[in-house]
Image (tube, rainbow, N blue to C red; front, side, top):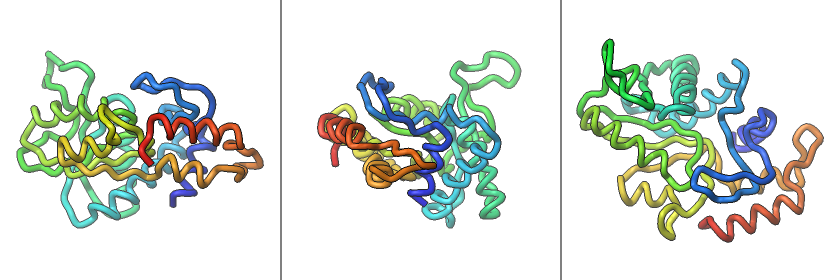
Length: 221
């Protein structure tokens, strides 16, 4: 599944190579932008990849899916649909607004109403320094005394967070939350280096050197 997912990201223009700046301010030679999924087929297929991993890790548990605004919103919806269609599961899901609604039903969350004791799985795209996760955890805990069972992401960039640990290691240590990536940056290099996608080499010697240098500077292998 890893090679298939990496190929899928490249063909969708979601995994690209060049000169970029991450949310944490780091200059990076590659970038993962799930906002570049543009078609019904792409978003449906993406949901199937997420659903397959969730079914593998949590198929015997009852859970609620949560997608942090904004990119987590389509992710949580398509994953919910795929879990229903592919695995006959019917999880509840919710996502947050960026600002609390002060009219109508009000509140910050849309979708399932969280209750104490609910098991929540967070659906995200990538983790660089863990900033987005630290922002959404208070939202969930303010809604109810829920149990965060895990975090599902597209790509583990394997980067240091606010210390000499990776962001994923920090999240585990600080909050007790396990993170489950579909692929890691090392999987990406191993899969794409000098291997063509639709007849084109996307990681050549130059890109590989830049990625290895970035891993050396910011990542924990």
